[in-house]
Length: 307
Image (cartoon, rainbow, N blue to C red; front, side, top):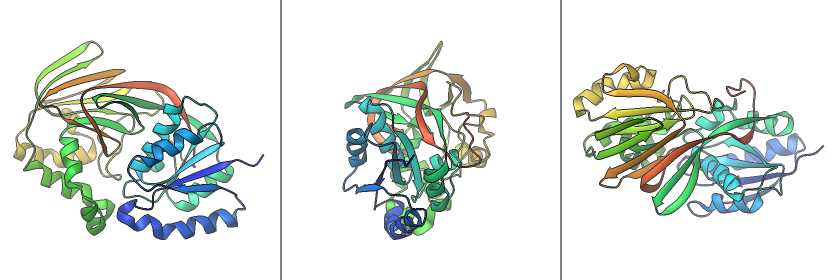
């Protein structure tokens, strides 16, 4: 049976480079004789509204862009409350970590998956902010603290100049000089932490930052658990010295890093901090992260890491 496909494309992804891949994508679809409707986003969070309106009307709603675009499309589908549609991922962004997670490495992989791939259920992280009062969903991770400062310093200009391999590392070290560690109250199932915190994150996948950082080692995207990092206050030089361990996923051995599984994380902070969701800023604390087991079906490629 022919799948009904909608492409939701972000022409600004990868600092504008995604637009140049659009013709390649349309050519690949034509070569495989796949018919698809498509719509282009023209402002931030537009894809949330488009996906929410389309949910249930198409077999596949495919995000054409990076992780931010994928996050918006997935959030719109989940917020709609409509079942029946599967998420497709076409990687043309700076960070394509969701695509890697589901076994898709190229545009050709993505088109082949649209034509032949089967769907797999994966967990999502429900993110509920109080300011503004809103809900979003993360596929990779959600975080409060240093992650937001890093994102602010990884600007579109930095992405364009350095590309996906180096832009987040550059942003990391730029952020070290401006970040002020806030006071936080963190509750994770039956655990509680109070004090100045460098970072609190809830992971659904091991790798983030365009494949550069193993923030949540051992995370599995369909195990019904969040992999939580609670990182106490660290000095700038200490953070810089431990940065290579973050890339390898061995940062969890640091005495000020608490790393464990949980199903829910609630965070309050003073001052209020911005929340990072799959590499995008969304709302401010107080915030709650809750795992929603196997809540989303995704068209998978080959070498998939969720079962």
